[in-house]
Image (cartoon, rainbow, N blue to C red; front, side):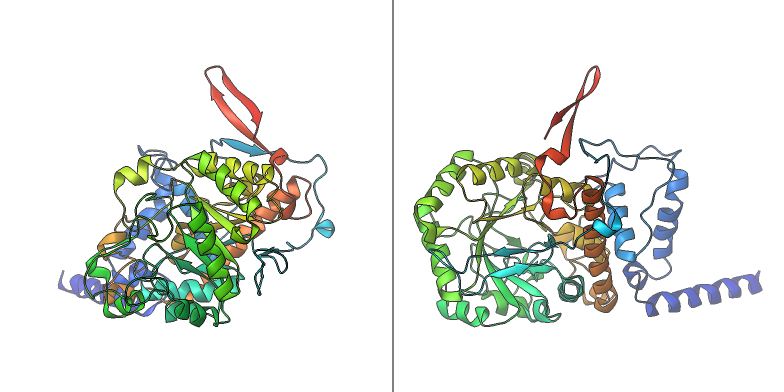
Length: 473
């Protein structure tokens, strides 16, 4: 027995040393030996689920099928499936009888954001090369290692990334990726000592070649009608310096910009930021009152200088690190209802060539991204999809600072487990695989590239008592 015990102890010690030295699996670095239990359960899950009580599509907010697709894509593992589909789709794409051959395929051409001439022109329009990009996640909500990984991965994957409302940090710039500087309601990073918008800070940030656009955040899907919430335990000295707030105190943004209370003020703010920075300016919002959108777009046609260069419409199912449950679950239209309305209204007002649309809200797999492109979105932006590519396991501890994978943690020991060099590659792989499979859907629909998607290429499936019936989306 003594010999057996010694062998077990030596074996466990060797496993421990292996786990803490490797960089590919954050869970094993942060929880050596014990972490293997999780990976064992995950690996054997596909064999045991025929006996278990929870199917693959039962988990929330993202089910196992969705997360597994992201994990496999980020790791470079095959996403091919066997025995047929497990999905119960709410829509399907209309494949062409004669799909596109390999030699007929074309590269995605990219789309320009901002105009160079006329009212509302900017001095430096931006040509966005990828239709799939990284949505706003603030440094502070994410750890420095996570932000660094995203920045490096964005550069490798050819996508842009938004700073989120927490301001621009050195970690955002670390990878030399294209950056969207988000201006939240508290104006972190571009505020003066009194908390007002600082033109000097705008010029300073706009002078950085990595910063390609500015984004005025009115609201986000998980908490429309409420500003950002960063618990005090996550406000470190560095984060406090970037945001211009006290160390250790909760960072709670106003529920709206104090200097933007109507369409006139919104238009003037957009025009002012664009004039100071010389770069495209967008607006991120959640659709609630459709009448607002009609009035806004009408104002854009009447006052072109007030027109945003793009709008990011975030669905009510959007994510965040901390939000009241009542807002996260019950306020704001979901992206499936909001996006078609916004694109139709843009076309009705003749702004489809002027304003680009970015869609976000649980669009983390190729089917949902392709659907959004069919509905008229020019770009899709994802936050949680890229968190999964970093190794997020949906532990639901984002606001606690104790994220076991180090993605949203403030504990140095947990953050140390997340290796930016390894995770950056996974971020890039996820972005590349997303574009690849969306293009596969486009080719199946008879399109040479994803820029030609239109509503006619997708069909909604409505489930009735007597079975299914289809309607054009």
